[in-house]
Image (cartoon, rainbow, N blue to C red; front, side, top):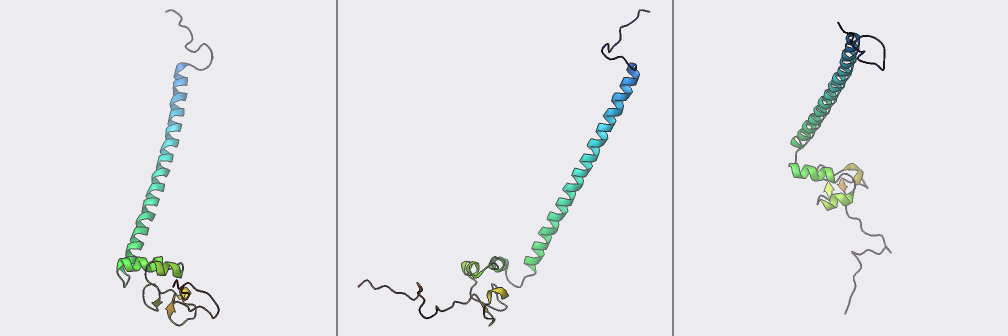
Length: 134
C-alpha cells in the first residue's frame, strides 16, 4: 500500500476523523446559539404583538364605553391640552358633564370651561376695537 501524503501538510496534528468531529462539534455549538437567538426573537415579537392587541382593545373599550359618539369622544380627548384646542374642535365653552369640559380649563370653578373673558378696562382687544374708514 503506497504511503499517502498528509491531507493537511501545513498543520500537523490529529487525524481527519478527529478534525471532522471538532468541526461537527463547532457546527452544533453555532447552531445552538442561532436557535436560542431565534427563540428570543420569537418571544420578543410575541410580547410586542400582545401589547399591541391589549392597547387596541383598551382604546376600543374606552371609545365604546363613552356616553358620547366616537367622533365627539375623540374631540373631547383632543381638547384636553388647552382651550385653544377645545375651540379648534368646536367644544368650547363647555359646561360640566359636557364633552370638552376639563377641570383644569375651568379657571374660576363655576362649571364652565374655556369661557370667553371680557378684556379688562384699558386693554385693547381686536374684538372690541373697530376701525371706521369713513
